[in-house]
Image (cartoon, rainbow, N blue to C red):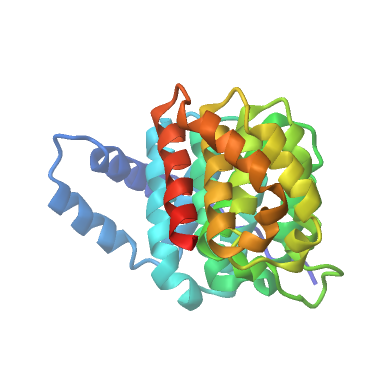
Length: 291
């Protein structure tokens, strides 16, 4: 039996939705009327297919229109994904995965946001292919692919960190056990964006403390010490944030290193970046509360 044909958009429908999205992001348009028209289109069963097609394959369309399609898709999926036909669900999932490493950063970021929302609905067991795709991107040595995967993982860690620390039929390891060594490796990346995303991901796990992080704690702490003087202020701020969380919820882990940590925090108090200095002040507030 022949496989079912892959869904294809109709040119007229695509044109009409594009025109609406262009009007939707224009500051001078009648937003109420456009919203009403978008609601009308959203009654059609394959409306989300059109949106993911525009986001993923809308080459030649303005980036802002593709982003608008992605953000509308994200909002729609929250309420309609479970009632979509299995073929439409499959289509949306399969179109998102090749775009994790899109060459345009804004598109990558929007795709990561949509992936995170969809992941919250289907969880690991409902989208095993996502983890295969993320793993492949992390191993690619292509910056766009690595950044796109890290952005999606970060958003998942931010929203539902505990969902990566589960046993899943069909996976030999919990996702976080597979990702943790790679995240720690990225602490040494020459790319500030990857250092920042990797540190941001792991920081989400300080409170829930999966065994994958607990077993790698020495490596994590060494990484924090080496990143404390990172050229990127965003990274330095995340290092301070890690110390704050550790002293608050895992003080016993920090106790053997307290002398070194407090020296680094004193330096961070005088950081040229105000946000880093402010985050370092938070450490003393929590530290004094614990005394």
